[in-house]
Length: 260
Image (cartoon, rainbow, N blue to C red; front, side, top):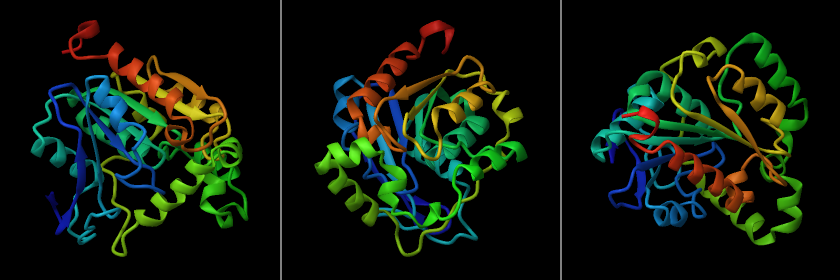
Protein backbone atom coordinates (compact mmCIF):
# COMPACT_ATOMS: atom_id res chain seq x y z
CA UNK A 1 0.00 0.00 0.00
CA UNK A 2 1.69 3.30 -1.10
CA UNK A 3 2.08 6.07 1.48
CA UNK A 4 3.60 9.56 1.58
CA UNK A 5 7.31 9.89 0.95
CA UNK A 6 7.56 7.12 -1.59
CA UNK A 7 7.11 4.42 1.01
CA UNK A 8 4.78 1.47 1.10
CA UNK A 9 3.14 -0.44 3.91
CA UNK A 10 3.12 -4.21 4.07
CA UNK A 11 -0.25 -5.23 5.51
CA UNK A 12 -2.19 -8.32 6.48
CA UNK A 13 -5.91 -8.37 7.02
CA UNK A 14 -7.96 -11.33 8.23
CA UNK A 15 -10.99 -9.78 6.51
CA UNK A 16 -14.61 -10.26 7.45
CA UNK A 17 -17.27 -7.87 8.67
CA UNK A 18 -16.36 -7.92 12.36
CA UNK A 19 -15.13 -4.90 14.28
CA UNK A 20 -11.58 -4.10 13.12
CA UNK A 21 -8.61 -4.43 15.47
CA UNK A 22 -5.34 -2.84 14.34
CA UNK A 23 -2.17 -4.24 15.97
CA UNK A 24 0.94 -2.01 16.11
CA UNK A 25 4.15 -4.00 16.40
CA UNK A 26 7.18 -3.62 18.69
CA UNK A 27 10.33 -1.96 17.38
CA UNK A 28 12.04 -5.34 17.53
CA UNK A 29 9.36 -6.84 15.30
CA UNK A 30 7.16 -6.08 12.34
CA UNK A 31 3.75 -6.83 10.92
CA UNK A 32 4.96 -10.44 11.11
CA UNK A 33 4.85 -10.36 14.93
CA UNK A 34 1.26 -11.59 15.37
CA UNK A 35 0.94 -15.29 14.44
CA UNK A 36 -0.58 -16.06 17.85
CA UNK A 37 -3.17 -13.29 17.52
CA UNK A 38 -4.41 -13.58 13.92
CA UNK A 39 -6.44 -16.80 14.28
CA UNK A 40 -7.73 -15.85 17.73
CA UNK A 41 -9.07 -12.47 16.57
CA UNK A 42 -10.69 -14.07 13.53
CA UNK A 43 -12.28 -16.81 15.67
CA UNK A 44 -13.65 -14.14 18.02
CA UNK A 45 -15.37 -12.46 15.07
CA UNK A 46 -12.95 -9.57 14.64
CA UNK A 47 -11.21 -8.28 11.56
CA UNK A 48 -7.54 -8.32 12.56
CA UNK A 49 -5.08 -6.01 10.78
CA UNK A 50 -1.34 -5.49 11.10
CA UNK A 51 1.25 -3.66 9.03
CA UNK A 52 4.88 -2.54 8.69
CA UNK A 53 6.69 0.52 7.38
CA UNK A 54 10.47 0.36 7.37
CA UNK A 55 10.15 -3.24 8.47
CA UNK A 56 9.37 -6.66 7.00
CA UNK A 57 8.36 -6.52 3.31
CA UNK A 58 7.73 -2.76 3.32
CA UNK A 59 9.52 0.24 1.84
CA UNK A 60 10.44 3.09 4.19
CA UNK A 61 10.78 5.75 1.50
CA UNK A 62 12.02 9.28 2.19
CA UNK A 63 12.19 10.43 5.79
CA UNK A 64 12.00 14.09 4.73
CA UNK A 65 8.74 13.52 2.84
CA UNK A 66 7.12 10.87 5.03
CA UNK A 67 3.99 11.55 7.02
CA UNK A 68 3.95 11.06 10.78
CA UNK A 69 3.52 7.48 11.94
CA UNK A 70 -0.05 8.23 13.02
CA UNK A 71 -0.67 9.84 9.63
CA UNK A 72 0.30 6.56 7.99
CA UNK A 73 -2.14 4.74 10.25
CA UNK A 74 -4.93 7.11 9.32
CA UNK A 75 -4.13 6.58 5.62
CA UNK A 76 -4.28 2.83 6.16
CA UNK A 77 -7.62 3.09 7.96
CA UNK A 78 -9.07 5.19 5.15
CA UNK A 79 -7.91 2.87 2.39
CA UNK A 80 -9.16 -0.23 4.18
CA UNK A 81 -12.52 1.43 4.70
CA UNK A 82 -12.33 1.41 8.49
CA UNK A 83 -14.80 3.68 10.25
CA UNK A 84 -14.38 2.99 13.97
CA UNK A 85 -11.81 0.46 15.15
CA UNK A 86 -9.96 -0.88 18.16
CA UNK A 87 -6.23 -0.10 18.41
CA UNK A 88 -3.55 -2.08 20.24
CA UNK A 89 0.09 -1.00 20.41
CA UNK A 90 2.87 -3.15 21.85
CA UNK A 91 6.27 -1.81 23.00
CA UNK A 92 7.32 0.81 20.38
CA UNK A 93 3.81 0.52 18.96
CA UNK A 94 2.52 2.04 22.21
CA UNK A 95 3.61 5.65 21.56
CA UNK A 96 2.16 5.43 18.04
CA UNK A 97 -1.14 4.13 19.44
CA UNK A 98 -1.30 6.97 21.97
CA UNK A 99 -0.34 9.55 19.36
CA UNK A 100 -3.12 8.31 17.10
CA UNK A 101 -5.61 8.45 19.98
CA UNK A 102 -4.61 12.05 20.68
CA UNK A 103 -5.19 12.95 17.03
CA UNK A 104 -8.21 10.78 16.18
CA UNK A 105 -9.88 9.67 19.41
CA UNK A 106 -13.29 9.88 17.75
CA UNK A 107 -12.25 7.10 15.36
CA UNK A 108 -11.31 4.61 18.09
CA UNK A 109 -13.52 2.21 20.02
CA UNK A 110 -10.79 1.30 22.49
CA UNK A 111 -7.05 1.55 23.11
CA UNK A 112 -4.77 -1.19 24.44
CA UNK A 113 -1.12 -0.52 25.25
CA UNK A 114 1.12 -3.48 26.08
CA UNK A 115 4.67 -3.62 27.37
CA UNK A 116 5.46 -0.02 26.48
CA UNK A 117 7.10 2.99 28.10
CA UNK A 118 4.44 4.86 26.10
CA UNK A 119 6.63 7.73 24.90
CA UNK A 120 5.86 10.02 27.86
CA UNK A 121 8.25 13.00 27.80
CA UNK A 122 7.85 14.46 31.30
CA UNK A 123 11.30 14.99 32.79
CA UNK A 124 10.58 12.98 35.95
CA UNK A 125 9.35 10.06 33.86
CA UNK A 126 12.34 10.13 31.51
CA UNK A 127 14.68 10.08 34.50
CA UNK A 128 12.85 7.07 35.90
CA UNK A 129 12.85 5.06 32.67
CA UNK A 130 16.50 5.81 31.98
CA UNK A 131 17.39 4.54 35.45
CA UNK A 132 15.78 1.21 34.55
CA UNK A 133 18.27 0.76 31.70
CA UNK A 134 21.76 1.48 33.10
CA UNK A 135 24.88 0.67 31.10
CA UNK A 136 25.58 -1.89 29.74
CA UNK A 137 21.84 -2.65 29.33
CA UNK A 138 21.89 -1.53 25.70
CA UNK A 139 24.64 -4.04 24.88
CA UNK A 140 22.64 -7.07 26.01
CA UNK A 141 21.31 -9.42 23.32
CA UNK A 142 17.89 -8.28 22.18
CA UNK A 143 16.26 -11.57 23.20
CA UNK A 144 17.58 -11.15 26.76
CA UNK A 145 16.22 -7.61 26.97
CA UNK A 146 12.85 -8.42 25.48
CA UNK A 147 11.95 -12.01 26.38
CA UNK A 148 11.52 -12.93 30.02
CA UNK A 149 13.55 -15.72 31.64
CA UNK A 150 10.55 -18.06 31.87
CA UNK A 151 10.10 -17.85 28.12
CA UNK A 152 13.81 -18.27 27.40
CA UNK A 153 14.01 -21.30 29.67
CA UNK A 154 10.61 -22.87 29.05
CA UNK A 155 9.56 -22.15 25.45
CA UNK A 156 12.46 -23.15 23.25
CA UNK A 157 10.38 -23.16 20.07
CA UNK A 158 9.16 -19.64 20.78
CA UNK A 159 12.68 -18.50 21.65
CA UNK A 160 13.93 -19.85 18.33
CA UNK A 161 11.11 -18.26 16.32
CA UNK A 162 11.22 -14.80 17.91
CA UNK A 163 14.81 -13.88 16.92
CA UNK A 164 14.02 -15.00 13.37
CA UNK A 165 11.15 -12.49 13.24
CA UNK A 166 13.46 -9.88 14.76
CA UNK A 167 16.19 -10.57 12.20
CA UNK A 168 13.74 -10.09 9.33
CA UNK A 169 12.15 -7.00 10.84
CA UNK A 170 14.23 -3.95 9.95
CA UNK A 171 14.82 -2.94 6.34
CA UNK A 172 18.02 -1.25 5.24
CA UNK A 173 16.22 2.04 4.60
CA UNK A 174 14.32 2.12 7.91
CA UNK A 175 14.05 5.34 9.91
CA UNK A 176 12.17 6.50 12.97
CA UNK A 177 9.02 8.37 11.97
CA UNK A 178 7.99 11.38 14.00
CA UNK A 179 4.85 11.61 16.10
CA UNK A 180 2.22 14.30 15.67
CA UNK A 181 2.13 15.14 19.40
CA UNK A 182 4.44 15.42 22.36
CA UNK A 183 3.15 12.76 24.74
CA UNK A 184 2.94 13.96 28.33
CA UNK A 185 0.96 12.96 31.38
CA UNK A 186 -1.18 16.05 30.83
CA UNK A 187 -1.92 14.89 27.29
CA UNK A 188 -2.86 11.41 28.52
CA UNK A 189 -5.34 13.01 30.91
CA UNK A 190 -7.30 14.46 27.96
CA UNK A 191 -8.22 11.02 26.60
CA UNK A 192 -11.69 9.73 27.40
CA UNK A 193 -11.84 6.46 25.44
CA UNK A 194 -11.57 3.04 27.16
CA UNK A 195 -7.93 2.13 27.83
CA UNK A 196 -6.35 -1.11 28.98
CA UNK A 197 -2.67 -1.41 29.92
CA UNK A 198 -0.92 -4.80 29.88
CA UNK A 199 2.61 -5.72 30.88
CA UNK A 200 4.65 -8.75 31.86
CA UNK A 201 5.80 -9.24 35.43
CA UNK A 202 9.39 -9.54 34.13
CA UNK A 203 9.36 -6.60 31.69
CA UNK A 204 12.70 -4.79 31.97
CA UNK A 205 11.46 -1.71 30.11
CA UNK A 206 7.94 -1.22 31.45
CA UNK A 207 7.50 -3.17 34.69
CA UNK A 208 4.09 -3.20 36.39
CA UNK A 209 4.94 -0.26 38.67
CA UNK A 210 5.71 1.93 35.65
CA UNK A 211 2.49 0.97 33.88
CA UNK A 212 0.49 1.68 37.04
CA UNK A 213 2.13 5.11 37.20
CA UNK A 214 0.91 5.91 33.69
CA UNK A 215 -2.52 4.47 34.48
CA UNK A 216 -2.94 7.22 37.07
CA UNK A 217 -3.06 9.69 34.16
CA UNK A 218 -5.59 7.74 32.07
CA UNK A 219 -9.25 7.90 33.06
CA UNK A 220 -10.48 4.54 34.24
CA UNK A 221 -7.49 2.64 32.85
CA UNK A 222 -6.59 -0.66 34.49
CA UNK A 223 -3.19 -2.35 34.45
CA UNK A 224 -3.10 -6.11 33.93
CA UNK A 225 0.06 -8.09 34.66
CA UNK A 226 0.78 -11.24 32.67
CA UNK A 227 2.67 -13.79 34.77
CA UNK A 228 6.00 -15.17 33.59
CA UNK A 229 6.37 -12.73 30.70
CA UNK A 230 8.83 -10.03 29.74
CA UNK A 231 8.51 -7.20 27.23
CA UNK A 232 6.49 -9.23 24.69
CA UNK A 233 3.63 -10.92 26.59
CA UNK A 234 1.66 -11.25 23.34
CA UNK A 235 4.40 -13.67 22.20
CA UNK A 236 5.55 -15.18 25.49
CA UNK A 237 2.13 -15.89 27.02
CA UNK A 238 -0.27 -15.50 24.08
CA UNK A 239 -3.20 -17.36 25.65
CA UNK A 240 -3.29 -15.01 28.65
CA UNK A 241 -2.63 -11.91 26.52
CA UNK A 242 -5.26 -12.82 23.93
CA UNK A 243 -7.83 -13.46 26.63
CA UNK A 244 -7.25 -9.99 28.10
CA UNK A 245 -7.48 -8.34 24.70
CA UNK A 246 -10.57 -10.17 23.42
CA UNK A 247 -12.45 -9.64 26.70
CA UNK A 248 -11.68 -5.93 26.55
CA UNK A 249 -12.76 -5.68 22.91
CA UNK A 250 -16.05 -7.38 23.70
CA UNK A 251 -16.69 -5.05 26.61
CA UNK A 252 -16.19 -2.02 24.40
CA UNK A 253 -17.82 -3.17 21.20
CA UNK A 254 -19.58 -0.59 19.06
CA UNK A 255 -22.80 0.57 20.70
CA UNK A 256 -21.96 -0.63 24.23
CA UNK A 257 -22.04 1.75 27.18
CA UNK A 258 -23.38 4.55 25.03
CA UNK A 259 -20.36 4.66 22.70
CA UNK A 260 -21.36 5.09 19.06
